[in-house]
Amino acid sequence: MGLRASLAQGLGRACAGALHMAGRSASQLPGRIALAIDPASISHSAKKLTQGAIVVCGTNGKTTTNNVLASAVEASGAHVLCNRVGANMAPGVAAALIPGRSADWAIMEADELSTINILPELRPRYLVLLNLFRDQLDRAGEIERVQDVIVSALAASPETTLVACGDDPLVMGVARRAREAGTKVLAFGIGEDLHLPADRVPEARFCQVCGTELSYDYRAYAQLGAFRCPKGDFCRPELDWRATGVKVGREGVSFDVSGVGLDKPVRVSASFGGVYMVYNLLAAFVGATLAGTTPEQFQAALDAYHPENGRLQHFRVDGRDVILNLAKNPTGFNQNISLMLADDRKKAAFFVINDNPNDGKDISWIWDVDFERLAVGSPRECGGVVVEPDDLTVVAGGHRADDVRVRLKYAGISAPIALTVREALDAVADLPLDRPLYVLTNYSALWPAKAELEQMGERL
Image 1 (tube, rainbow, N blue to C red):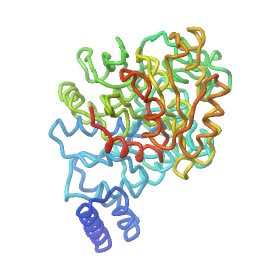
Image 2 (image 1 turned 120 degrees about the vertical axis):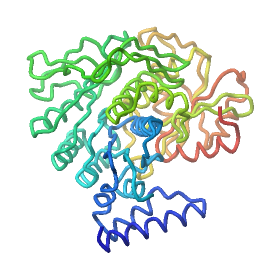
Image 3 (image 1 turned 90 degrees about the horizontal axis):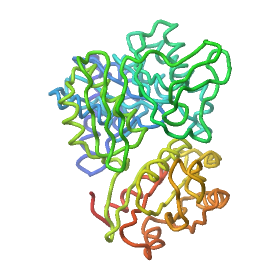
C-alpha cells in the first residue's frame, strides 16, 4: 500500500475513532475523508479481505438482507466488515472497510445507482440483487436507467457472479443482459403458488425482450412470481434455490430451502416478516451458503437477530404495542399493508411521508399505494380480509401530511393529522390498548420516529 493509501486509511481510522468517542455515527465521514485523499480507497481496502466480498442490492429489503447475511457469516466464525446502518453509497462502503488490518469477508449493502462506483473498486465475488421497483423518481429516474447502471457495474467487475431474484422480471432483465456480457448468473425464488391476490398496480407488465404483456402462473407480490412471455422470448429461469412450504403470519415466516449445495430441504424460520421477507431471508441464506455458512449456523444467527435500524422494530408505549417500519415506495407500502392485514387484531396506523432530498421531492407515488385495501369493502378488495369500519384508525403525518390525507380521503379513509408519534398515540388514546399502532415512514422520518419511540417506550 502506497503513502497516499496509507494516509487515507490512517486518517479515516482517526476520524472514526474520534466520532465514536464523541458518540457520533462514523458511517460516512471517515469514508469521505479516505476517498478524498485516495480515490481508490475501496480498492486498496479490498486487498485485506482473505475471502472476498458480497454486495447486496435492490430497491426494497437490502438493509435487512445485508445484516442477516453478515450475522450468519459471522456465526460461522468469520471476521466480517459490514455497513450495518445502511450507509450504502461509496463513502459508506469505504468507511465500513477501514477498521482493522485484515478481515475474511466484506458484506456490503449498495444503493442501486452507486453500484457503478462500488463494484469496479470492490470486485465482489457475488452481487445479490433482490428486486427492482420505482423509487425516488426525481433522483433515480425510471427503472430502465437503474437497470443500465447495474449492468454497467457488472461489466466493470467481470469476476462477480450475479445472484438474482428469478421471480422478478426486472431483475431478470438485468441478468439477461449481464449474462450476454459474460457474467455468471444464479437465481433464487419462491417455487410455489401462495394463492395471494395480485397487487393492483404492478411495477412490470411487459416482456423485457419484445414488450408483450407477461403472463403469470402465479404471483407472490408486485411483479414477482412465475412469469413468462406468451411469445416465448422471456421467462422466469430455472431456479438454483427455491423456497417451498411457505408460511406467513403474524408470528413470522417459515419456509423450506432446496437447491445448490443442499443434500435435502432446509427449514428456515424467523419471528418477523411478510411475503417480502421470505425473499429477503432466502437471499440471505443463499449468500451465507455461498460464503460457507452451514444451515444450522444461519438459523442460529437468525434466531439471535433483532432489528435495530427501524425496520420492523417493536415497542410498547403506555401499554400499547407499536410497530415501526420503513415504507418508501408503492411496493413497500403495499407489502406493509399486507403485513397489517395479516395481523388479525383491530389496529391503528400512522402514515408519515416527508419530501426531503433523501426521500425524493416527488411523492406522486402515493397514488399507486393500494390504500383502498384498508377501507371497507369486499374480501377481494381487501386481500381476503374484511375490514369493518371500526377495525382501523388512520393518522397522517410528515411534511406532506396534507397530501397523504387527501390520498386517504379518495380511498374512503378519514385521517386526522399528527406531527409526531406522541401526537399520533394521543389521537388513538381512546382506543383499547390491545390495538397496536403501526408507524410506517419513509426515509427521513424513520430515524426521528425511532428515536421518539426509544425515548417514550421499551423495546420488545
